[in-house]
Each structure stands twice: as C-alpha cells, then as structure tokens.
Image (cartoon, rainbow, N blue to C red):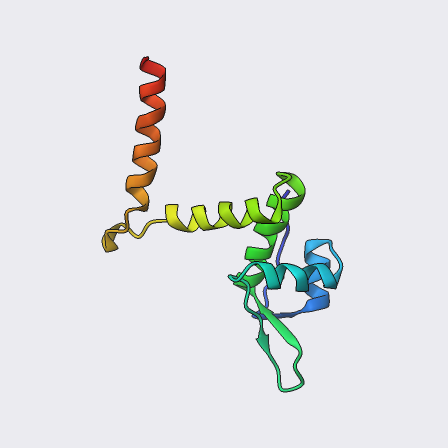
Length: 111
C-alpha cells in the first residue's frame, strides 16, 4: 500500500495523521517511542514534521498495522534496517552482516 506524500517541506500533525490514516494522538505517541522522528517546534510550540519524518512514520505504520509487529519489534526492525543500509565507501560493516546472514542460509541448505 503506497501512500502519496504531498510535495511540501513541513506538515502539521493533523496533515500527518490524515496521510497515515491515524489519529493525532497516535502520531504523538509514535514520536515519543521512535526517536528517529523529530519534528521541529514553532514559537507557538506547534509540531512541524519534515518529509523524512512522515516517511519514517509510514514505515512505522506498515510495521505495526500490516506486519503486526509490536512497538519493541518495530524498533528492532527499524534499527536493523539502519544497520543494513550501508555507505560502502565508509566501510560500514552492515554489508558484511548481510553477507554473513546469506552465507548461513546457504550453509543450512547444503547440510
């Protein structure tokens, strides 16, 4: 299920809630649980979510509602994705973790 995000830089919590198909209190809760979502605050203390925040919240919603993960499981999955996303020039070991996982699967097949 692909959700279109409007071409804007910042979104208010009501807009984000509509995009996600949840109530605003759910967005606030997810913001408190998933530290990768950091909306900026205006002088009047209103939350403004960036496009990358909305994208992260869409991943959270998919994990919780579609894949039926718990909050803790979704946190682990998102942390694992970050470890697996690799900037190969920096020498990040994430690619090695993926290769090791695949080699273990091959080993199981060969037994």
